[in-house]
Length: 76
Image (tube, rainbow, N blue to C red; front, side, top):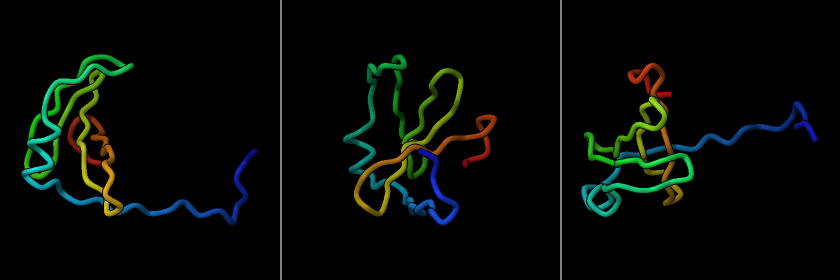
């Protein structure tokens, strides 16, 4: 069922990760898409998956989100 034109996409604010969050989440993981390694990079955790660079960022609702980097450089 298509969304109506009146439906708004919610804006989700992101924030940097605390050093404690980085330390707890950093490491190597097996996912359905392959192995990934999360490494601390500034106030985020960075990874590469299928040749694409991504950052793990905190959200204001206490969850984590992924910020994709276009061409590995430009965060979207």
